[in-house]
Amino acid sequence: MTARPENDYGPGDPAIIVATQEELSAFIDRVSARSAAQPCPSLIEVSIAEDPYGFPTLNAGIGANHGYVRVSGRDELRATQGDPNASGDVVYDFQGHETLVPVSQEVPLDTVRAVLAAYLDHGGLIPQDFPHLHEVAVV
Image (cartoon, rainbow, N blue to C red; front, side, top):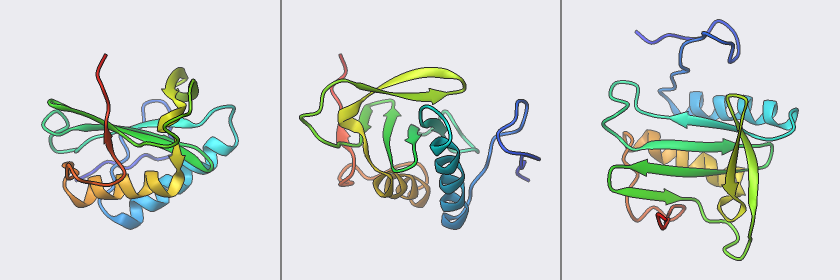
């Protein structure tokens, strides 16, 4: 049985569980709409509910029109790739905390949707050759 929040993103609400592409799309739409009404876009953390530590975790920024995705696993760090010549950082909001993300990782929201859909479709293991993710050098 999965828990569903009684309201939208309130303190103490359980995690939001999505199991279908339709639920995922509706969730992205909700976060995107909320991001459009605040100073900076929202950042979400995505994991496999049954085994959150056994699979790579995603951090996804979801704005009104743009966002980013970063996949962190035991042996990998991949992210979306926007303009490779862009420099600087963009601010995302994670639970009321400023999170700086390289602006070069920002992509159209449709790309964020595609990566999150692949995570759901592949049970948390996005194929290495997935075209929207690129290796990120760990410094």
